[in-house]
Length: 538
Image (cartoon, rainbow, N blue to C red; front, side, top):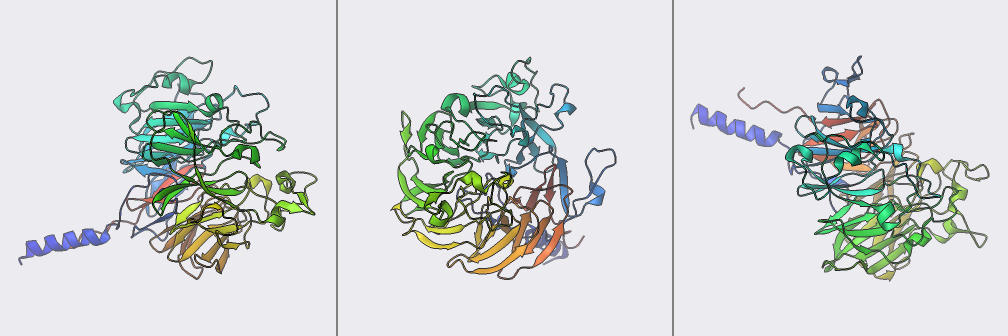
């Protein structure tokens, strides 16, 4: 072998060894339909430096970063995880900063942004103005939290739940390839009610179809609309965010659907859960659904606003008229002593620390009912899910369950493989990997449990409010809290590799796509990557 051939072989080998293995897009909340936040990529960073803000307020000085490919400014509130597909990065945020575009005025609504995956360059954005015309009695005062949904990418379409309680189907390319339709009123949509429509440009979002859940389905969301949609074939599944009134006493519209199925091609309603769930909601219906095949059936798993985890049979044929989903099983996640005291039901709102008469001292000891806000995770014929409440309600006793997904009917007793009550309320989605379950609670504790038995191996205290879950990748745990971003070693011993100050709170979960770790704070999005090794011989 001559020198040139030897160098060529070594260069190729070096490139292969330095490339991430199993590189893939991250197209939806949780990465996959099972929502298990685990990926197989290698060569991911064990640390990074997010950098310093420029003195002129224009962003982060890249010269002060380390292991950062690019960073971009988002809004002032970001709660949905980024997703990555088709060479693009999609993220929901608020509309802070739209004044940079003279066509817009900030309405304290939402925004969907699309960036170039390679550079972080903004390709397009879609403004979602604050909804000002609301049904009587509706408490919907948190639209300033922005688009809390993680966009779901399927082919050349992006699906997202907006801050205005709409479901949108968008073109991944935005208006750069023209207005695809059939929706043609993007200019009026982004301008808002009562304002002249804006003139569209190539950097605006392109709506294919729109479903207004308030007007078309009589949904009455509480506080905010928050769900990330699930796509199975031609069907789109999503929670509706239907909820209670401002005093937290009654469901405004108990007849409205809690879980819906749409034809992803047109937005037509094809099914609902149909089991009266909305009439039993404690607070709101926010949990994103998941799915997995059990035996010969595809099941859709839904965390109920009543604290019950449900499994429905996925649709296999497109109905001509809306139908009711067939319930496969249900599992009550609140044990009896969480629901009743002295033989009487315990109101959910009693456990809200903000209520003057609440016995909740916000130390995690309060026992009362909770709903499911987290996403049920499907793994090896099991469903892993925890209960909790809106973080504004404060701390309280939680419960985490491992459910046998092969059972049928009411499986509260027969389907319980194990449960764990050593955590506070949680709204986080678990990650299951290598025989271990990682779950965070609102108080900021990361719990490592045995996936088969529920045995607790360790609990790590971050001492900071935590909403997001853990991402497991490359033998590491990535975790965002209100105060810091943690990188830890995966395994039966707690070991911190790095603790990083992002400069603002983070309520998201990290994602990995094509060898890059994406970390979002309230205000910025970082694309984090190990420096590429130089080919041998150069």
